[in-house]
Image (cartoon, rainbow, N blue to C red; front, top):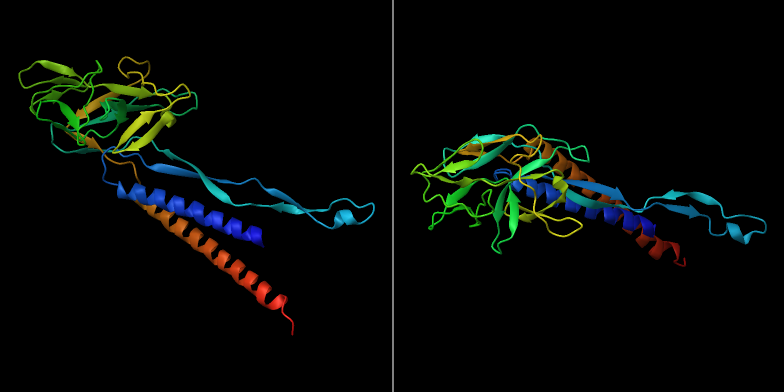
Length: 276
């Protein structure tokens, strides 16, 4: 019976984390370039239960009763890097990546493209959020003040918001001079990227932090840059709400099971051992 407590409790914890993940997805429904998280649950190793007193009888062997599940847990959260729909904003400082032809990686999944930016510490990070602005010094920055990097790994200085971006990411300022080309990185396995918050991803490999290769000129990689547009979040509100309600129901089922075990334990302690 005590094992039942652990099984029900682990189920409640797994659904609590699932609910938290789904709620975060819904809260970022209108965040440009947001990639929804997906959770995968896994069971703890099962136990083989055997009769305890079988070995006390001469010539007998332990008698197996059967397998016992020991609960579940959320193994990991992985972002869904599928392309989101584009929304026109008319803002010249906004930009969106539209992926076209993409090669398949070693895991059989298509790679993903990202804008390259630098964080407050000057480290390279990656994002699909192209909701940008121009700072007081004329540099193209994210809404959090991070510099947008060009193909040459340097911040892009556009002067003011009267600039244009062609489909290849080449930026021309209001004087007609080329200000640089947007740095677009290619990840053949986007699962190596880790969310940092504010729409930023960092790359983590077994060899430590490294930089993603550029997408420009990469074999089989096709994309266009759309100025004046933003990529919508790829969160499906209907599907997410359905999963959220299902997670609530599973949590409540485990809660009722836990209450039943508690009542049984209370009865065993107060009634079975009492003298009448």
